[in-house]
Each structure stands twice: as structure tokens, then as C-alpha cells.
Length: 362
Image 1 (cartoon, rainbow, N blue to C red):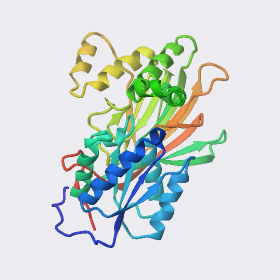
Image 2: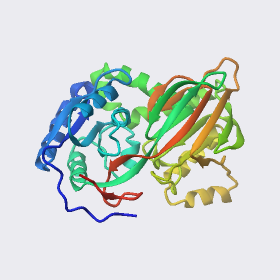
Image 3: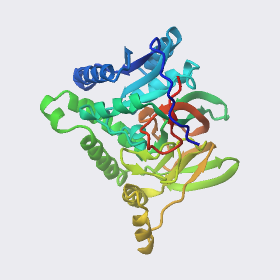
């Protein structure tokens, strides 16, 4: 149940921590960071700045160390989904995730988590609007997840925290293709200005779909969801999702909640299922799905669960199933377990966002 706004003021001795990557976009992100800091100062949010570090896990370690060394009222992740994920991991690792809320200044390409709560994404006037959200201080709880990579004996080989999604198959393949093309584009200034963001993603998606006609990328999945067994055959994509928005615009389940203790699991059975669902998920009213069913177009059915075990088997011998965690490339896997961490984080959101908004605590 929503709590009335608190009239208490945060202690001025407790500063916010802004985490961002000055080297992003060939160094052009420095101007965005300067604008964000100016807007934070104007809003009365005293803060320190922490630059991200290259390499998986290094930013999370820096955030954990920073929070262990200082009093902090708010952690602000500025950037895309990858930066947000690293900051959230550092906050969780500090043991202070229920004490310190997490704020967002989304400036990346997809920004699924920010969009899920109605935040605008960008590096211009969007920063001012999102700083106003931080200053207002309304909150909602957010579930996080643990992804366990299992070895052939079912023993845990690796563990990773995520706050948005994990995926297997076509989506991660598109991500890998996009990252390769983005690295190539960054080296050519003129092309870089014209060919970036969603345009790069769309081109990568079309290329990956085209390649799927030449190479069999399908896989079968055995699922144990909250103790119930089922299977999916001939998938080319599988998504495990928390917040509503996926790939920047898709709504996988309009009824999902960010703090319900469950993740949505969405299978895509082949190219036609993937393409028709892409159209379906862009329609947030649900009427397009009814129209498709009247035309005889059926979709593979998903599920929601608090605990999942997945065994993935490629149809093509020797093939590897690509994976992603929170929009970042992950090693190929064949067996994983996913567990929900209910209401693991306090997230600062617009006052009318879905979930159970509440006033930020001191």
C-alpha cells in the first residue's frame, strides 16, 4: 500500500553518489555528466561522482567500496542498462540495498528498466526531468534475480545478479551482432553520427533473422518452474524478464509487476512466432493480439515463476546458444537456475509509476 509523502528531510551530511562513464560515446558523455551534475546541484542534491571502470565487475566493486567508506543517501546510475546493472550489483554487494535507494538517469539505447517506470531516456532535457524525479523521491520496490550457471552434474559453477532480464538465443545473438557493428562504427566518425542507437539494433536484428534462414539456430528447453515440469520445442529465443519493457519498446506481459516476486518467462518458437510477437508486444492495448487470433495466428505460451531450472539443448550438433544478462553478453550455457530475490532494491521512480510507490526514506 502506498505511503503518504514524508515531510522529513534527508540529512545534509549524507550525499548522493552519481556513477557514470565519462569515456562513453567517444568521450562525448562528459558533457552529459556535467549537465547532470549541474541539474543535481540546482535540485539541492549534494553528490559525489564515481567514474565507471572498464571490465566486467569492476564498476560493481568500485560502488561497493564507495558505499562501504561513506554515508550515502542515494546512488544514481547514469547510462544504459549495463551501467545500471553494475551499479545495482555494487549496491547489493555492499549490504545496504534496503537502506540506500537507487536512482536512474537513463541515457543508453534500450534503457528497459527506466522505460518500464515511465522515465524518459536521453542526454538533453530528459536529464532535467529525471533529476526532478530524483528530487521528488517517490519509490517502489524492485525484485532482483540470481542466475546460477550449472555444470553437467547440476552443480553451481557461476552466480550472477541481474535486475532486468536474462535471455538465450536470438536476442543475445542480435546483441552480439550489434556490439560488433557498434565497435566498427565508432572508428568511422561520419558513419558513427548517422548509424547508431536503435538504428544499429534494428540492422543487427534484421541481419540475425536473415542468418537464421541459413543456419539452424533452434533449441529445445526442459523447464522446471516452481516445481512444475514442462518443455518447449524448436525455440529460437527465450526471455526471463522482471520489469515490463524489453528491447526498448516491447511489453512482454502488461500485467507483470516489478515487485511481485515472480519473473515472466517468454518463449519464441521460430521466426514467425518471434516476428508476430514483436508486433504484438508493441501494442500495449492487447487488441492486436485478439486480431491475430481471429486470423488464426497462435503464439507459444509463457509462464511466470519465482524459481526456474532450464536445460537448453541446441538442435544443431556442436552449436552454442548465446546468452545475455541485463543487456550484456554472457557465456553460452546449457543448464541454469534462476531465483527471484523479492523486493531486493528500492528504486526512485516517477510518482505515478507502476508498483507500490512510496516516499523515499531518510
